[in-house]
Image 1 (cartoon, rainbow over the protein chains, first blue to last red):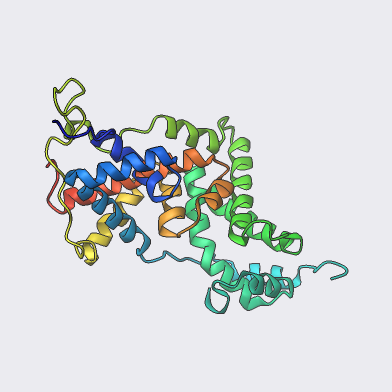
Image 2 (image 1 turned 180 degrees about the horizontal axis):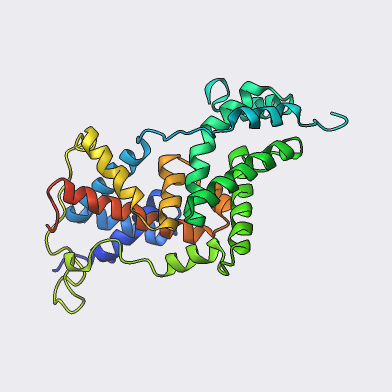
Length: 86
Length: 213
């Protein structure tokens, strides 16, 4: 007997990763995605690469900057009117 | 954001009391991000700086009426997006950013180059990997060089993808916050994010020496 079909192709799998990670795949697609992943080493590796990519993006150092006129903005803030009654 | 990080009610209360330290912390925390988000919508450094200035003034003016129905940052970036789209209109650009983002989402290319899969009419394995991807070493992306490859890949993404991946992954915002801040649909933000992540993964795969395999 031939093994059961994987139901989604590897090409489809690659399109569904973010929706899967966000937990927004409909139940049926989630089951297909996960059972494909169990049976397909290539897609398992792809998922691992994708997750490492997300992890690395999340750990990039944060870029910072401040406006040239921060002092002036801060004065504007300080002198701005709070509402008449609090 | 120093003492206020993660405690938004405290921060909002301090801003309402006009505590300068709270305001300065807020500006330092978000000014760069605002510039990048504005630039993605305007493609013009000077115009982006103007719009971010206008946004800070609007935040000062509006903080007392901020209702807390959305997060403070979502509220601020919604103001920014409104200011940017007003600016786009004033500059004679007919198409709002949200429409561009939506067109980009519709036009998104496949996540993985088609040549990596067998063709549709390939007998037993249509659309399966021609040659399986291989796992990366877990620590492969910790090197400073890898980080700079990632940062460059992000910078080179199309505007709509770059702004979404910046908010979702670099800043860790929730999908709903990104949609609200940019005025785009949940589906579109996810397509743009997915395309952006896929491109960064592809660049990393090439960097790690697996390109084309």
